[in-house]
Length: 332
Image 1: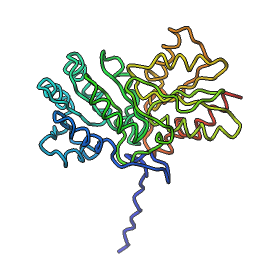
Image 2 (image 1 turned 180 degrees about the vertical axis):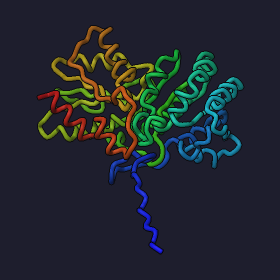
Image 3 (image 1 turned 120 degrees about the vertical axis):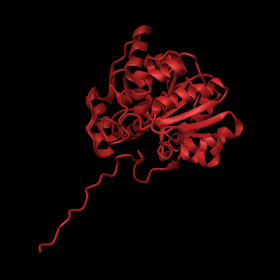
Image 4 (image 1 turned 90 degrees about the vertical axis):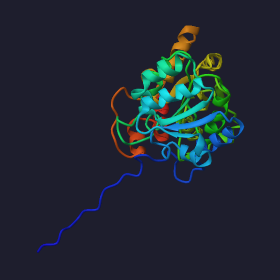
């Protein structure tokens, strides 16, 4: 009898994985721990999820406050409808799921049940943009475009662990519905080096520079700062403007920073090139009559491949090395 030879199963390192680079400082589950701290001050906070507490770090809250945690099962529309109902009774639900399910599957419930009645629901959605390698079924590359169209909905896209921790307190203090892109697991820590403090509705200039202004949100601010250091070899002086609140947009700061003569403006976002931060900034500048040289670094308007995150980030132009090469080409 011949022996049966089995091949080792091929695996990938970054299907649902941390976006942290090798050796980078991280904080474990900043959202979960920040929510516990905020819940101690606000007894009306409840945590809700659609069978994804472990993968949104809400399990940490559930362990601390089991009587304030609600597992709704794999039913995102029910999750949003129930969150709206709880908000009507004076509670403040933090509803978590993956961004694709919150936006594509439960959009009408967010629009009609939560936003139209301006209910105090905080939707915290994991795996935003290209932060998973599972392909189009799990990659929320158009979530901001969808949510920007909902009247009265605040949209937040934190950069790192510090941003996430501070944003939780800020959105809890805000009266009204919020959609926050959620970084989960071991989240990089970078903004503590830049004297940073999150303020809802405010953009922050992290570094100034005369040649290029990168306007960014979410993980792309981390990449922009890495690119800034790489280009400091004499290639370019780069300014980085972090925009953690996509809606309402800090138009005054953006207009002021884009009015510097001779500076290339680059908007970098972990989102489709359609309907996100780049188009919001472009519209703002056109309305204000400000016309700098303008470029976008964003995900293409297509269904993206599955695979390991580092490979995908290189392929779609949002890795640090890709950003550096692209900016050098634009400046040449």
